[in-house]
Structures are given as C-alpha cells and as structure tokens.
Amino acid sequence: MILDYGRTLDYDALMESLYEEISAFKYLPLINQIKKQKEYCYRVLISTVLSSRTKDEVTGQAADRLFTRAPDPLTLSKMGEDEIISLIYPVGFYRIKAKNIKNIARLLLEKYNGIVPDNIDDLMTLPGVGRKTANLVLGIAFNIDTITVDTHVHRISNRIGIVKTKTPLETEQDLMKILPQKHWINFNTYLVAHGQKICNPVSPRCSRCKIISFCQQVGVKRYR
Image (cartoon, rainbow, N blue to C red; front, side, top):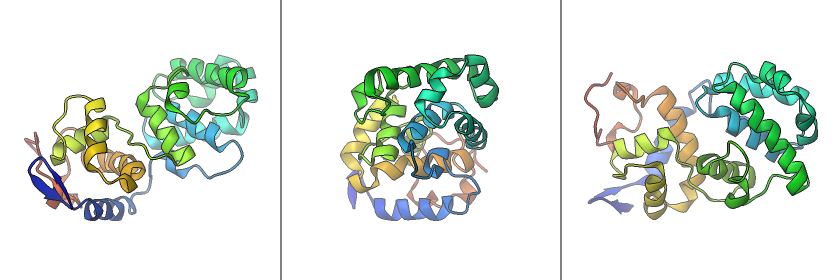
C-alpha cells in the first residue's frame, strides 16, 4: 500500500487489473511486441521514434516494412529519404521521421560503433529522441527501471488522482516517488494500451474500465 495525496492505493492490485484488461486487447503497444533478436535495441529505438502520434497498428505495419529492407543501422543509413518515406507512410509526420531515423542510423555508426547507447543523455542527442522516447528505450531495450510518461500516462495518472501535475516531467518525478519500482517499466505499457482503448481523452469508456474502483475520475465531465 502506498499513501498518495491523502489516500491509500494498492498498486499491485491496480497493475493486476490493468494487465487483465489489456490481455484481452488485439493490439498491445508495438514496442512490447518486438522479439529479442539481432539488432533488437536498434529496432526498439527506431520503432519508438516511429510510434509518436501514430496508432500502434499503423506503426507496426510500417516498422515491419522498414526492417525487412533495413534490418540494421548500416543499411538504413544508406537508404534515400524518399525510399524510407515509402516504407513508413502513413505514420504521423512521416517526412520528418524519415529524415530523423536516417540520421539516427548515421550517428549510431559514427559515434557509437552501430550500438544503441544505454543512457538517457546520449540517447537524447539523437534526432527525434526526447525524454519520453529515451526512457522507453532504456526500459524496453535494456531493462533499466524507468518511468516513461507520454500523453496517456500523464492524463490517466492525473485522472485517477495519484498525481496532480501540469507537465509530463512533473508526472514522471511524482510517480518515481510513489510508484513501486517493480512497476516502473510496465506502467507505461499498461496505461498506453488502456488509454488507447478505454480511457480516452474525451468521453472515456468508464463503463468498461477494469480500474474504475481505483479512479477518482478527476476532470471527467462525460463518460460512456
């Protein structure tokens, strides 16, 4: 039991309920579906960059096409941007992402001997990689305990009432204080899936929510 903002919350039970819910979903966040194989960290990094502002189904199909043609940083670095665009379309901001992932591949070869760095500072020097992406890569690719806060994690954490924050960075900092470390990596995975399917930004599907008993429904004016 963890005391947060004046109430006691059983985070083990919360995570168990979320796991039960998302296990029934057809699609889970793409990053968690990548099998550990050669160039695994490279695939996690590039897939994470592609996934921003894009549905997982679209990202998954784009990543499959891309990695079939560019299974490693060297191959990707030699591809033209137009070819990359043709493979990753219609992910969001595909032109910008094509340029970014080509430059990521080049920088991995020039600065890191083709190996994805395993620290947040180096990761955030790569184009298109912000704090959220870096944390997700560290957690998924390297199994380093991090809390990745995207729009879903930020929104739902505040909606449940376990934090009262205005920015994703504030949410990350507060969650690190109250969320048991064993749940840090999976917290993003579970809440992203929950946010995409159930806890929508507007008119969430509260009648289908497995964690409604944990939720204060902060800011929810209308729900289904």
